[in-house]
Amino acid sequence: MFSLAILLGVAVALQSAVNAKLRSFVQSPFLTSFISFTIGSVALFLIFFSRGEASLLTSLTDLPAWTFIGGLLGVVYLTSNIILFQKIGGVQTAVLPIFGQVVMGVLIDQFGLFYAPLTAMTWTKALGLVVVLCSVIIVTDLVFAAVKQKSDAPFIWKAVGVGAGMLSAIQAAVNGHLGSLLHSSIAAATISFVVGTICLFLLVIITKAPFSRILFALRETRRSLWVWTGGLLGAFYVFGIAFTVPALGAGQVIVLALFGQLCTSAIIEHFGLFGAMKKPVRLLKACALLLMLGGVMLMKL
Image (cartoon, rainbow, N blue to C red; front, top):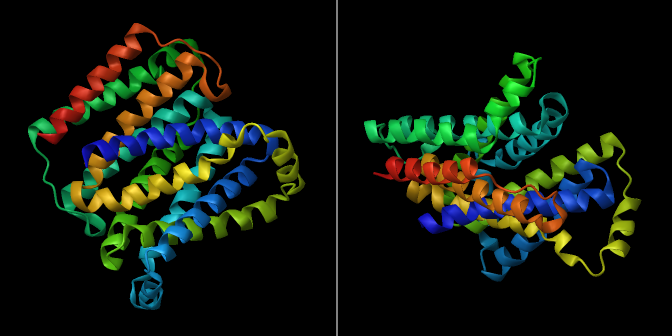
């Protein structure tokens, strides 16, 4: 179960790299996300119906309305990151949502919010949280960015970044509870993706993104079909969240996934995989990843 949580983070890092490449063909970030969500929704629907769980759809009207907001929260998180990248830069866009995810994950576990398993705070868990957050700052080069930048970003955008991360943690808890109510992680993931797809379709229409770019991308990627796998990776992540949160708790799943995400991102940058800009990993960053692993282990004790 712990290995699966780490793999969820690996999937997030791979999805980001894949979708970034797809965006270079379709241009619009909203259209890129819509394509990704649509592919993920189709994949989840096929699995959902092949498992003979279609009868679960008849029970959806009996569920609380708030259990369906997971997909909407995912879209808000995605859209916030797109806006923040232009407002505060890539470094803080990465670290601030992560901070929000970890903090909200701990709060959800501490108070059993959204019907997540109740996990009380301990000294070792608190120490592990501090270690994880310190290592996140080092890994994302926030300290070095702060030294180089003379003018800091407005506080409001920093607050938006942290808030977006907190919404992502809430999404994990909501989808986990929905999976428990339906007794099906696949059903919860499918519903979340469908809601997200609908929201993104509306965003594409509002922003007037050119659908013709999809045909252009299809022609240009005939020998690089991997650029279309972002939706499958996203579907795996949402399904995995709904499956692991009820068993491990939102806090541990988020931290373990974070470790997998940052390690995979460092590997992608170090070797320049998926067309990413090659950026060798310094010794300090590698040590910070090991430090994070130690913090994760403390939080699990």
